[in-house]
Amino acid sequence: MPPDVPPTPPSPASPGRPGAEPAETAGLQPSVGSSAQTEAAGGPPPHDVRPPLIVPVPRRRTGWLVGILGEEEAAEFRSIPARIRAWLDAWVRKSPPFTVSLSVHVALLLALALVFVRLERTRRRPIDLSFAAANSVEAERAGVQMVEPEPEPEPVSQPDAVDEPEPVEDPVAAPIAAAAEQVNALGSEPEPAAAPAVGSLLDGRVAGRRERLVAAYGGTAATEAAVTRALDWLARQQQKNGLWSLRGPYASGGSQENQLAATAMALLAFHGAGTTPREGPHHKAVAAAWTALLKRQVAGPEAAEDRADHGRFVISAEDPPAHHALYAHAQATIAICELYGMTKDPIYEQPARRAVAYAVAAQGRNGGWRYEPGQDGDMSVTGWYLMALKSAQMAGLDVPAATWDGVERFLDHVAVDGGRRYGYRFDDRNRTADLNAARRAAGPVTAAVSAEGLLCRQYLGWPRTRPELTAGVEALVGEKFLDWEHDKDVYAWYYITQVVHHVGGPAWQRWNGRLVEVLPAAQVAKGSERGSWDPALDKWGANGGRLFVTCFCTYMLEVYYRHLPLYGEAAGQP
Image 1 (spheres, rainbow, N blue to C red):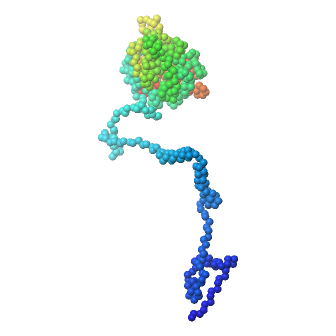
Image 2 (image 1 turned 90 degrees about the vertical axis):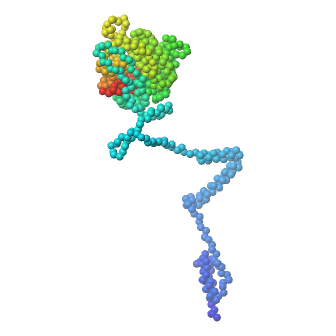
Image 3 (image 1 turned 135 degrees about the horizontal axis):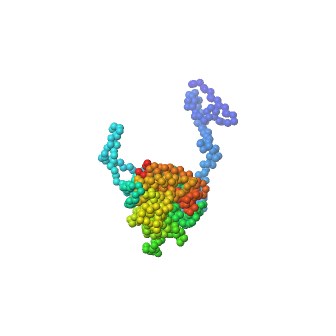
């Protein structure tokens, strides 16, 4: 028998924990080997030996939320959904069914909107490329050919408005075929010539072309800025009834009122820069003026066509004054014909035709116009009427040939120095059989009426190189060379500027060089009258006032595009 093995003494209990396992076995599985050893030793298996109880040690819950907020605040944050659900439950229970239904439907509509709304994708223009047989031109580099395509027909213009008009090609091309040059001996009678076509002379006012014409004919950024300021000033002076006044509300008004003339002159300044009732920075002012002015033309059922004043513009019984009535009508006729020519709007056609008919009927016996219809004319009023009738032709309206013949006859009567200069008027009571003696009797001869006479001759067909015209231009440039301080005469300068611009060459370069220097510098730069020109010391400034002087200075600075040169591109070159 194997020797007796004394039993293993029990392990002493841990202090303070009766019956507890030894510290080193707490929480561990018992070793299988130790049980086998007990049995092998011959001892009885222990009756009270059980697997040690595994007590999990509670682990503290941690996480990113606890790390950020702490345990208490994290627990409160996690309870928010439950509190929201409780609040919604209480709200639903307390709210009437209509409110709940409305809220649900609104939420559904918002959800549907978010589903179906999408961003508009940028549309790209497709580009069609086609290849066809064409004439090829050899390039400078070998192996590369440039294809010269066949010309395509001009596309039909669309009425849709565009924000930025494309530049007009070749704006300074000759608009008019000049009359055949028949140079007469100096001092001989000028032979009548057919009036040239003038239908394209208004084309320079088109946006996109003006800028190129300014550069081509010697304008500057300063001249264009001065025009802009002048038109701004004019717009500020418009009255509530749409008309303008020669007397105010500005400083230095004229000595007498003539709202018809003032309104026509202001409109001519706006038209010269391309502004119409529908286009241009001041189109609203122009529209208001034409609305007022067309109401003051004698027309309609109460004015039969056989009435002597049919077609005449009149503001009131006193406006315009009797001795300025035909002056003002001529200016208004230029304006309405320009407007119809620039817009081709049918609403302006009949007013233009009526105004032209009245002008033709008012021509005097000697072929000119003066203060009353049918009265023998003077050069000053006749110059305005020639431009009125030429503006009608520019708009495509007909003028009787007999009217032009009458103007030629009148010019012959007031011509001086072989047609180089012109007098104000010729009194038929001084007529003699000697035509040269009759010419000597015409007077007074001034730079203004001489320039008017030469401008009339240009529009009636005198060629650019005619000696009388050349000599007359040289005399005018030398006599009235834009002396603002000592010899201010904007009325004469206005006509000289037109004549010399049509002739072009060295005379135009000299005159324009002075023009671009003097007029912008003399414009009022500050105060309530900024943009205007002071009428003080002007030959007619006291009569016409600030508006009169400002309008004529504006016309001169618009000369580069207001009317294209009568003799075409060559006139702008030396």
